[in-house]
Length: 171
Image (cartoon, rainbow, N blue to C red; front, side, top):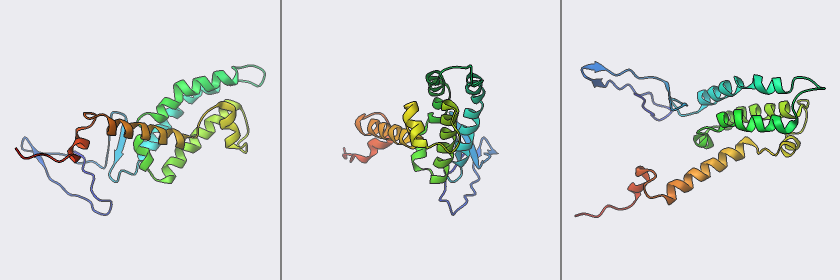
């Protein structure tokens, strides 16, 4: 069981199910999203970076040497189809994450752009984004969050919690 209390208070609940106590945890993973006690998303961002990093050897093999290897467009396509979906999977809650958490994901994204283009670390990020046709990760997260928000507002049965805002008539 997971309870999300106010950040300053630690809850000590003792719930029973079938006569046995239910264990509480500080973090858990549900459908690939790691929740922590304060919903800070730090552990989730670390998990995302670890998952995406495990896919990087493929990009590194594609960029094997200076005289041979795949073209920049092949690297970019491989990144967009194989690594970026891992980073952007269920990224909508990250819109409320701290700047530090989003910065760590953005730094990882920028390192991959360096790998795609084959530039040194001092290359301007805006130039790399322009050359590859990618967007900053911050903008991708904002766009996905806005799309989800519009779905919630426009679809009457999308989330039943949002339908509770309408007044209930007494019968």
